[in-house]
Length: 224
Image (cartoon, rainbow, N blue to C red):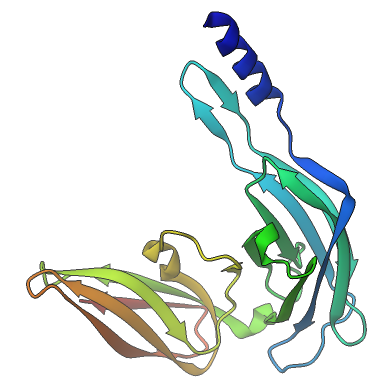
């Protein structure tokens, strides 16, 4: 038994992200600005990452991130990238757009899986970057005034930077990560949220409008 445990420990700890050297995957898309104009010469980077894992007193598998590809947008804002197919021991493929975050906001496309590719190709469509000078920081503060109601989801309708997008949706919805957003100045932004009423065992959808002006920061209290 001790010998088997030691062998298992060796296999798990020495395991690295593996790739199929003969199979290639194609990733493509288009980057535009808030006025729907193509952004040229924009760097796009791809990584394959693995989250850390451990079993107490047995093994520890550290996190790992491999840089596997880079592309630059053309005059139409389009890019294409060919990468080796990761085949085992990885958590996600991650795209990083505008890592330097110079004129425009940075964007991450996360939780890309091999299953998202159709015939070895993934078209990520059109993604929009906003000029940083046109963005304000919105912070939503939650204020529960009804003990029988629980907030179970938030979404926004309007123009916002959406700096992190999940291509494959996460299994659990982290509502609190939606409370800090970079949004475009001078607009009426709608916040739509879902509530679970445990007194009646029903759900309800509520919408409120947030007036976004040109202030550098905006704080909004959500009473529910």
